[in-house]
Image (tube, rainbow, N blue to C red; front, top):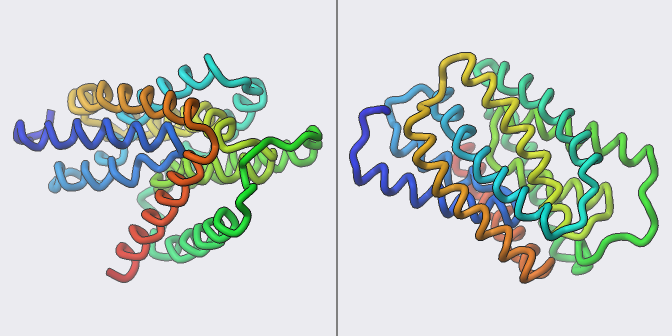
Length: 258
């Protein structure tokens, strides 16, 4: 356990619970959890903060995935295929995390998020209901490449917003409704977290005792969030999605130019 006060441990546990809720509904729990860890561990190496973040997040994500799988019809086989590609991508991203400038990537990510927000706002039907026709094999392979390898690589390299990107990609490419996309994203996100965590653990960059304590709260938040998303439907998820996308744009903008 790092040298940290009891008060800060409580703050981190509360942040972990809230992050689990956000992540279960639409992804993006790292927007809250990662800054909280940076605040609570100001003298830790960045890689150790990222590794601890992954150790916490994977527990809540797994809990949310199980909650969704029990009540939502999912194509688990497809989700696992995307997840395995994402696992490979996240290992590669984590391995390169220390060697690539984040400043060169933030403007591109912000641009993509702004476009995504515009689509969600001006297309009210986006993610409201699944498409009637089955998706083609070509579109499935494209999803494995983009939502799997591409977003998995981003998760290992930077992280925050990965779940949100997955929900958006799965909705757009596979024509899923937002609730089913969120459920599928949880399975994929478990794989990206596992890949990145394995690399950080191999490098000795995880505070396991702190992560275990925070993971309990993250798990509780994730299960509550998944149940709310299932109960309230795609309209609720859409509202949370826009909020998280806006927060991610502001966060990246402050990091770039603040």
